[in-house]
Amino acid sequence: MRLVWQWIQLERELPPNWSDVRLVLKVRERDADRTAALLGGANPLRRGDSLRLFVSRRHGFGPEALRRALLRLDRQGIGGTVELAGVTETEDAPKATPTTLAAQWDAALATLPPDWSDMLAELVLRSSDHLERAALLIAPMNPTRPGQGLALQFRVARRFGYGVSAPMARRCLERLDEEGIRGEVRVLRVLSDTDAVGTQGPVWRVGGRAV
Image (cartoon, rainbow, N blue to C red; front, side):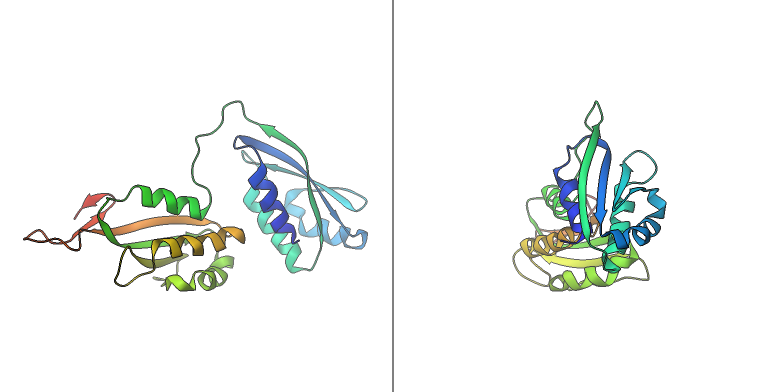
């Protein structure tokens, strides 16, 4: 299993209030020097074919930096195992916030008005390294890229019309979660009551307010 995948699985099993973890990365002895060089920013401590890493949510080398470093090792064809050596928890658990893209999507849907029918949303990636891969994985959403930023916009239709279905959008976001691609999901505009009668007509909502 790829190193970055091993860390993603370990991270998912950590307590929600973890602050620091100690990891042991074991590689082939002939790869140890090159691995230590590629992990220079992590200040690894080497013992034979093992490298000890310290990852902190509060300062220094964080989980995102580790993910990028392990991805570099995977791309260099360096195999091995990532093992948890210890974890430190904070006294007070932080307020739970959606971390995965699928969870963010669920939270966004929960805030929509009950009569929503159409939506314009966007996925803002954290790294340009993931742009092409992310666009491929969410191809069923028919994403567009406005400008030169890291945002991919897509439309969602609840019942019919132009746009991907909400369940399909969630499945696409789950694919990104499975590959460790991080970002933020944002609802830009929501159309409510497209079947309205009388003079009011459909209502666009931006930031939860009618416009």
